[in-house]
Image (cartoon, rainbow, N blue to C red; front, side):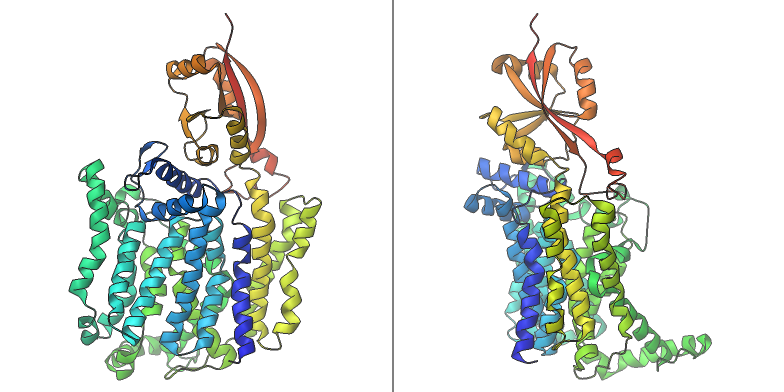
Length: 578
């Protein structure tokens, strides 16, 4: 790889992050992101960094690490959108470097390292994690750091194992034991199936157990102070393994749920990856890739071929860490009883590193020792770009009426296509077309669609009025507004309270003369009856609202959207004169 190709790949990696950078000051979405921001705000305001509070109440659902990171950013840069997203962006940059280094350490190929970083940077999954940062961006980063430290220990210095175990501990207090389980699947299973006993003994496991367990034990002790034994049990068992295999989290089982979600999260090169897996499996079963071989002959050949391969020196010298990270983890989480799409983020780095090798062999003929060349029709690299083109065209046609500057932004997002004639002099169209089409859609989402979506979450606009008209208050009242909508609390810089007890609300009303209340459309209809008609209501603001974190197909149809929108009101309530 020449220096110009290297510079181009690095530029494409940085350009892939531009949509996320452009959104760094955008309002955050309910539910989870706004909740995490509000928890970190309360942590910062109280200067209490051990006990988690959500809306002033004890919180147990997630461990502490994410809130430490965000609250530290709030402490340094203030409680705002930029400070909330900054830690996730920093972790993403560090992750891209670690992915590059992992790939170089495994393959001794700088080109593969840059390709792997490009695949991860340009994946819709990473953009999603950065647009609306969840705990998974930090967990995924720690998983990447764990594997980076592992390869450093294998290739450079065994003392890096201590760093690997430390990152496991950090991941543990980010989202529980899954931070240890996934490396156990990738690294542990690789060592066991290859019977690499020497490698296992070199990993400083007794010391590693202590290093890994230090942070989880500390956090368990803190939880014990507040929740007795239920706190550590929830942290270690219920909120982790319980989500996957415990009946209390049982959902309708869909074995392809995570495969489908991996398809959109991996995005640009999922179809070539799927075709590659199919072709390699067929080749392995037939022994030559000859599809005409009878099925009876294939099934008779499999056990002996597999047994001979497992016993061979080629197998014992192989490195299955990344394939196990991708394929075995995907298989195991597919049996989960609690299926959330963000779980698929945990294997995206493995997919990027694995696919980088496929692209290197296919597009550049880069073969490491023992690798076989790739053969794949170019057609499969253009299926996803064709879908992305339809997506782009459908935005003004089906989804949103663009006005004024929005049309300019929409057309400006086509800018990456201008680079095509230059880039194709140095790279195959099978690499450039998916990447550039993905960049067009990424820019469209970051610079246009997210803003159009977040318009239907009016919390920051309402909160601005609340802070102006009701300064100094510690509580914002709401009625028939879901507790999951934590952005009202974060942007108003105060706790929120549902009006359940009329006597408490009326006491505040008598003390202050009037109070502001946020109501849903249904709440506005029911509020007079609930309060016995004793108050005068003045509507200050009316907004269209929608749960934009989980939009339906009808929401993206501009003709049907009015039928799914709700109303949110900000009202001033005063006691009615007798």
